[in-house]
Length: 128
Image (tube, rainbow, N blue to C red; front, side, top):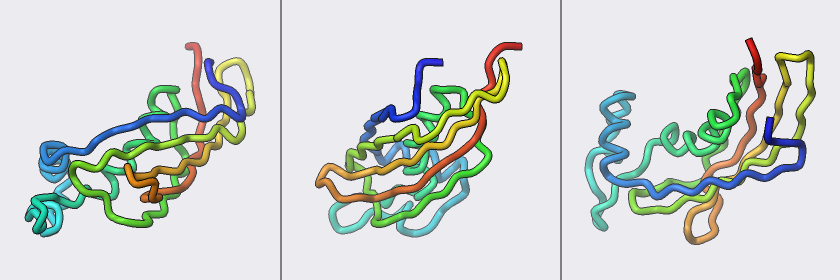
C-alpha cells in the first residue's frame, strides 16, 4: 500500500458538456440546469458527478467505501476546473488483508472557492 496517514492526494479535473450529458444519461438526473445552458452557455455539473473527484482517489487505492459524507457549497459549471485534495486522516491495519481508512477532502474551483467538502471511510482489501 503506497499511502500513509497524513498524505494529501491531489486530483484535478475540468468538467465538459459531454461529461454532464453522459452522466445525465446514466444517472437520469435531468434537471433543467443540467440540460439547458445558462446565458454563458454553461451547464451545471451534477453534484454526484462532482463527487467523483474524491471517489477517484479512493478507487485508485482500492478503497471499498462504507461511508461517504458530502457537503456542496456552490455550483460547478461546465468549463470549471476543480482541484480536489484528499487527506488521509487514519489508516489502521486490521489483519494481513484488511486496512481501515478514513479520509477528508476539499474541492475548490479555479477561483479558489470551495465547491465541495466531506469525508469517506472504508476498508482497503489486499491479497487473496
